[in-house]
Image (tube, rainbow, N blue to C red; front, side, top):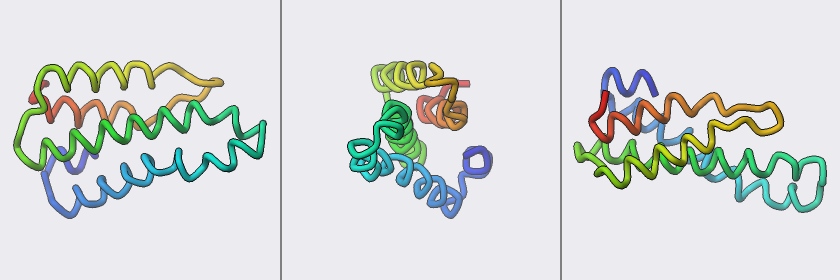
Amino acid sequence: MAAFLKTGDRKTADEVRGHLGRWQAQAEALKPLFVRSPALAEAEPLSKSLAEVAGVGLEALNSVLAGKAGGESRFQDSMKILSKARQPWAEVELAVISSVEKLVKAAGRRP
């Protein structure tokens, strides 16, 4: 994401979109495993959180590409989702949150 924010390159944006899309889709794809395995089910909240963060990232990416600020309400909603996702789950943190936050700030045109 840093490379995209630095250059605004469409090819890089497509790569970022691909990663975010896979992260968003993984929660639904893993759902059957969470149902069958109690051990894996413990990771479901983290999986859902990653999907929400990815959704926020995709919205922000689209705003940046369109050259349109997302609005104050959308910015605040996005930041709340990221703040909630920052809370460690079973001592695991989502490393991608800081990068998505930069994308959200770029979409909202904030430093």
